[in-house]
Length: 164
Length: 422
Ligand code: SF4
Picture (tube, rainbow over the protein chains, first blue to last red):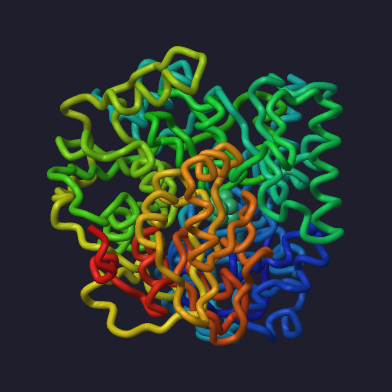
């Protein structure tokens, strides 16, 4: 499985309130949430984003609330992958639980700029910046989490386990 | 191998004699919490399991507190979904408007939290219950659904940072100042994936409400949980609220901590976090002249009775400054009633403040006090992110109830010492 797209580059501490402002949380409709994704830090994001594009950010991406609406809005906006130096804990869980691929790789983050074209190979963890011809290897997921990703999220994984 | 307090609780709930940092475990949960924003998503996910019951109907708590009393039709639909689920699955702890409060103030008050419990909630401030010596942490809606179905959830065993408290707070300084000071020191990702454990001779002098406030904001340092040792103060609280017997865990004396930070409570000054991150902490002496438009006193961080009492001490017989809107929201119905009986509500209204029914409302920019472009608020809440309380060009300054009340009176961020209360 691979991701390939144009990079939207953000800084430290992109919080869940800017990913999807609370004022829109009176719905859980994914398409409606996606239409406001990143609105408070990047009002043109939703107009510019194309299927497969990639978000790259510095440390503590997704800090703040536990709202699963945040990774859901990003996933529904057709972002194929988020790469950051580090992720906030709940955002990390939520992304894995709903099947939004996320990768921690501080070195890659340093070498990627806004607008670069990046390719990610999820099996090997290889991140390639096609604009600059540089590449990095992200840390692989622990086996338990890999199983969950293969099952396409926590619910499907548990259903399989419960059926055993 | 020795373990921290958090590691011991997780080990016990995972049925393991020993755990180590980084280990992934499946652990039993004692309580699963959801609110009107996160539950509808969890309910959708729960349906995929095709189950006719939750793992234990006495161990699920559903609290409609964010956009309630329903702020609009969409919010009403979400609450309806939750109410219906509570009815269909016979959930014992569903709190309707009129009995509800802000979840993290409500659950301990209703006796649903005990020392030694493992509690998860689809709300990031679920970490509040560490004040009572429980392991509690925020998760997402899919986690909530999985826990409602199976009674279990996966956890990664965290490392811990230890804060050794000594001394006692000076006048007008409280748990809020301590936690803002800590976040200012270690940063909003300073405890990422880790526990924050408190210890030391200073703990005994902190009130239960101080500890709730401190643990509430552990997430603002990125922590998985914050936790206090279970001492006489905590045991008394549990005994008077919870029917179950407490289970007390203590960190091993040689438990490994990533680092230990000493804090003298007597040296903490009233502290304010400037926009737009809780780590932008300044002492009141460094604040300068910051005029404000609104003051918000309440939330799961500081909407408890002692918070209202402090605000009332300052507001009594005085008037809020011209042009400042002061909104006070007690965190639960019981706190509201107590504030009424103690005459605090009269003091607030006479001072020119608004008293709201318990709701998250203004804290998350939901309703009941949204900021316009360019406006500034001093709030006793826990987040001051861009757009948190309204317009993206508005600003939130986080502070204690004492600083908030003093600011309401002066129209700028103020030191409670200035007001001249004995
Ligand atoms: S009061 Fe604020 S922080 Fe607390 S639960 Fe409600 S929205 Fe969240």
